[in-house]
Every structure is written in structure tokens, then in C-alpha cells.
Figure 1 (cartoon, rainbow, N blue to C red):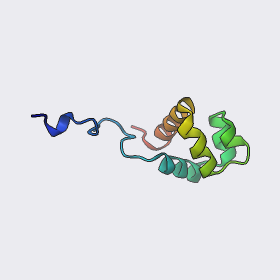
Figure 2 (figure 1 turned 30 degrees about the vertical axis):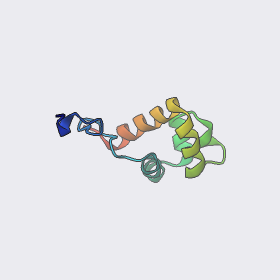
Figure 3 (figure 1 turned 90 degrees about the vertical axis):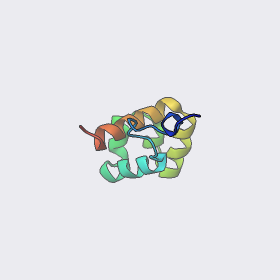
Length: 80
């Protein structure tokens, strides 16, 4: 019998576990302007007519960009 601790959803050391991409973008846009986000991460969804909705669509289809956004979120809100 497999214990509960071995399930794939149990990620106690992952600070992004359970955090939705929507929540990440909302917190980042509360802290930074779209222009500041574009300066930090050079992606067009932050430069050209940026919205949460259009950014989510792009980031869900573009793993490298999502990784950069997640890294900025961690640097901005999860300092140790």
C-alpha cells in the first residue's frame, strides 16, 4: 500500500505548489507596472497592450516564459 506522502501532489518543498498562474500575475501586477514587468522579462505580452487575460494565454502556451514569470514571482515574494 502506497503512503500518502508518495503521491505526486504532495510537494512540501515547492513554493509554487497550489499557486495558480492567475494569482502569480495578479500579485506581480500589484507590485510592478506592466512596463516594469516588461523591463524585467522581455516578452511581448508585457509590452504590447498587456492584460492579465492575454498574458495568461501566452504564458500557458510558452513554458520558457512561464518559468521566467514564476522565477520573478519567487524572487519578489518568497525571499528567504
